[in-house]
Length: 92
Image (cartoon, rainbow, N blue to C red; front, side, top):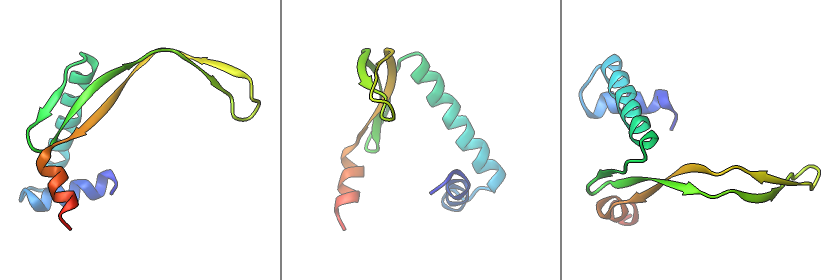
């Protein structure tokens, strides 16, 4: 599902116009981005948790040349699914 399809589905499920659904999605993405930048967790009970996770620097290889390359430390996001999401995914 791409962003346009998601907006259409959100509009249908929440009984919103596509314009309002797009604004809601963009607002959600802005809040998530802001929280992840501040290294704050976002807990949506039953659905899941977004957790900013630091990664240390590490040595990797350039797949084309095979030369070693040092990857800088960075922060990634881990999603831990909630109980109800997992139950729904595995019930069928």
